[in-house]
Length: 298
Image (cartoon, rainbow, N blue to C red; front, side, top):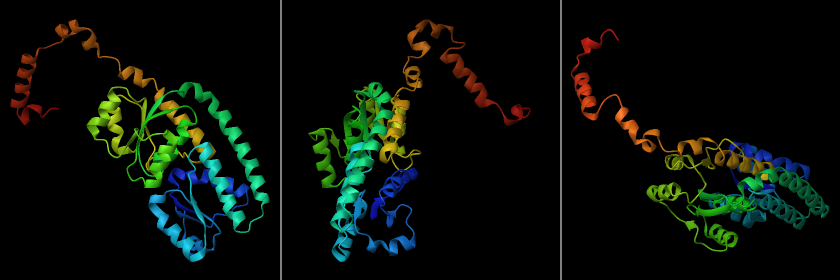
């Protein structure tokens, strides 16, 4: 098979490949993640293909289907149900291209085993994260795949960016959320800050460019874009994603930074400050008027 639009961020495809190996499915080419010249040169010999990020390589998949009759589908390895469905779709295409139908039964056995393991690990997080609100400020395939993954454990989605998302991506979001009122094309930094500072979300998942908006609003933030340090694909990746969200939300630092400063809750402390604004201004003038020679011993 070919995996198109998979970038192997943080090595997350390495969490999925062992599942394919157990089913006897060989990855002919993973483009562009981990792709070598030999892999790309022989990609036309694959029997099926999966599109992970349709925005990137959907045209390539269509051309390969037209020229070499390689059927493809769009799927995701984010979340338990989507990972299971991706495996099912892959083996169905392979059976359609002549593979032994026995692989269908082996796939269901593998899915049952992996889902049981994942849900057992996630059970301890379900109660802690039930009803928590997430703002997803990303785009592309993650705008719908991560939404579905988070909703599986009871997390509420208060907004998801559809920037760089295709029409098909937006339709999937509507199917998952049952409406489109939580979809936004673009949110200005001021609006984003207002939403977070008013505590309309318990955590924001986004890229590094907007992390400081969340931190300024004293709101937990988790990197889910290209710069992230943890893999979130597959069954094990879903467990890791939930674990990182739990660590971010329940980090004790947030309860500390949200407390008012001592001088805000105790006005009398202002009278105990060592100098007034007038005195501090006088000291600054003296410092500014000092010559470099006076600081030569420092």
